[in-house]
Length: 154
Image (cartoon, rainbow, N blue to C red; front, side, top):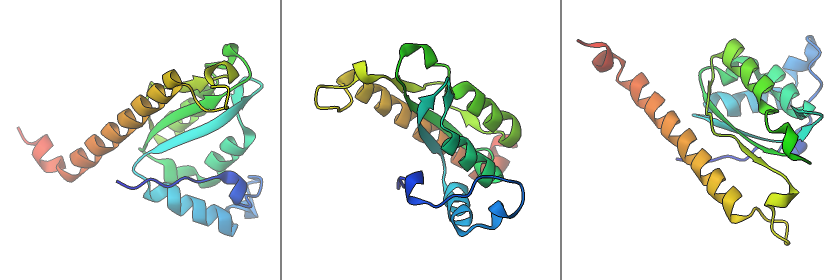
């Protein structure tokens, strides 16, 4: 299984304006990457009790490429009170694109980091558990899709 890291800072994404933004070359590139993915992990800072505007813009621009994919969330925030921040984004993915949201978010603050600024052991463990859950769900969905006839048989 391969993994691809997409850093939005490396893509010149336009703001989703409902007109020509969908034809932008970066939108097409990212749509293809998301469409080809078996699952998606969204890593986002939390701003004002929500995921970043860049993450939301990506979802709006790439839309149906997310359809029926497992999605997990890893968030970094300034304080403990924003831990529910991915829920609005997750709801949009579930309702509009029928994504399967992995109910194991990773949420961390500066208190979860080592003095060197690295994730501490508890966060690393949670990241590994999230990654394993996303991979398991993605593999299970792929198996079901490949074996639909056998699964539906009496």
